[in-house]
Amino acid sequence: MSRAYISTVDTKTDRWEVPYQSSYGDKLSFEFSYLPNKWFKKIHKQITIECMSLGKPSVETLYRYNYSLKRFFEFLKEYNLKIMDYADLSHQITQMYIYYLQQIHLANSTRSVAMSALKWVVEHGQFFEYDGFPEGQVFDGDEYQALKQDDVLRTRYIPDNVMEQIEIALKKENNILLKSIVEIGIDSGIRLSEVLDLTEGCITEDFTGKPVLYVFSPKNKADRYIPVSNRVKRAVQLLEQYSEVARKELATNYICLYWQKRNIRYARLLQKIFRDKLYRFVKKHDIRDNNGELYPLTFHAFRHTLGTDMLNKGMSMFEIQEYLGHESLHSTSLYEPFAKFTS
Image (cartoon, rainbow, N blue to C red; front, side, top):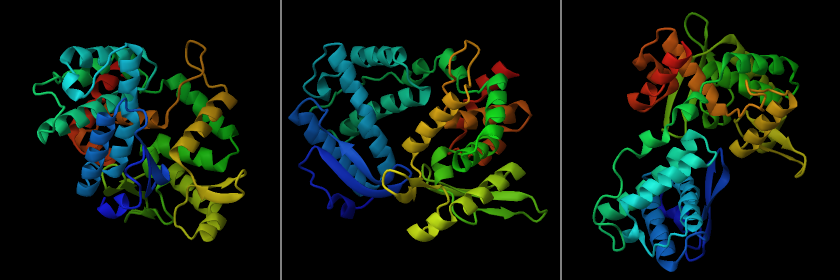
């Protein structure tokens, strides 16, 4: 991320529209209006500009941190806590924030990002010794462990009876785009951002004739080739056929495209649009959990379910790490409790 991007926005305003092509759209909106005073706005803008110039963390990570930090300031408001700058932050407040995140209905990954956003900005300010930041430690290193409650962890693995309902629903589903993407997710475990970045010709064959999928990860800025099922091959080929007219009109190679009825044009499928489609898929086919409630299905749950099944089938951590594209074994090791729970 260079200063060329920064020069396109008015940094004095509290809302930045940064042009950046991703599965979030063709621009990323950075919001600073929720920050409580001039000091917070000034320091957050300063740190954002510095990180954009350095390219670390990535602009998409900065975007997630920007909107995730809003939860921390909502917490302060709800608990009637007032801090004038981060120097007023204490270990007691961070512990209260953990409790707050535990109480609200969020996915475990969303809680973790909310905590990461706060730790990132505080530790960045401490490292560069900015005024207005704590001199001592306000985090004890156990924040993420505290947020990983067993009941939350277990929801990552899709139960067999729910998966059966999903498979039955897929046979009835006539939306080619939705059906194909879900089938790819179930069988390959790739991230939603990776699916939405698939391009024409991403399916090839190895020397034995088995299908191989080329995957680029926006998260890691890395690519990989993974063996996939024939169902994934068919799903990708369907997406290529389905998107043919749209690709020509948009002059693009992306295959996850759809027709916008409201705007009367083709467009790339965005994560927020797909998540809404997935929710409506669950509701349409009445997919429910053991308590009779609509199942809170997320696309990322397909990834966790596949990783757990791989462990249960005897694959090594290193094999799963390479297949799923984890940057470190730490992410892969999180599947171990699921394997023990489901085996």
